[in-house]
Image (tube, rainbow, N blue to C red; front, side, top):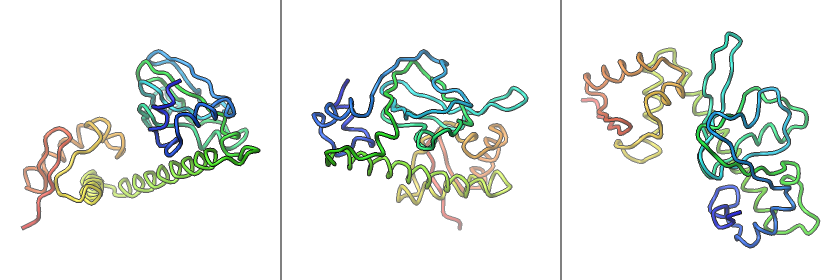
Length: 220
C-alpha cells in the first residue's frame, strides 16, 4: 500500500504516511482490482465500507425501470465514494458503482472510521474531520447543481453554471472540468440541444468557448 500517495488525498490530509500505515489495519482496510465495466457495488446492496480510488476511475450509475441508465457521478484517483450510504446501517444503495476504467479500490470500514479508537489518537481525529469536510463539500456541490437545474430553460442552466465558474475562478476566463456530454449530464439536458444553445450564445456575443475553455463577455 502506497501510504505516501494516501497522505496526499483529501481523506488522509494532514496524516503522515507512517501513521496511515499503522491506522489501516484498524480500519479493516482491503484493496481489490476491477476491470472496466465491472460492478463494484450493485443497486440494492447494503454496504458498510467506503471506497477510495487508488487507480483508474469509477462511475455512479442509476438504472431506470425501462432499461436505460444514467451516469450520476464520477470519481477519479484519490477520491472516495459511497460514504453516505456506508454511514447508515441497512441503507440500500439506490445506484450502482461501476468501474469506468480498469481500477484498484481501497475499502475502509465506515463505522471504524467514525468511531474514535481507544487511544483517541490525533490521526484518527484528523481522519474523521477530513471525512466530514469531504461530505460537506459534496453536499454544497449538490446544492449548486440543484440551483443550476432549477431553470426550465437550457440557457438558464448554462448561465447559472458558467456564472458560478467565473466567480469560483475569480475571472471571466476559465476551464470547466466537463466535456460536452458530461456537462449535459450534469445540467440534465440533451447534449445536442445544449450545444446548439452554446452556439447561439456565442453568436450573440455572450460567451466565447473552445472545448472546455470559456470566456464570459460583458454586456454592452
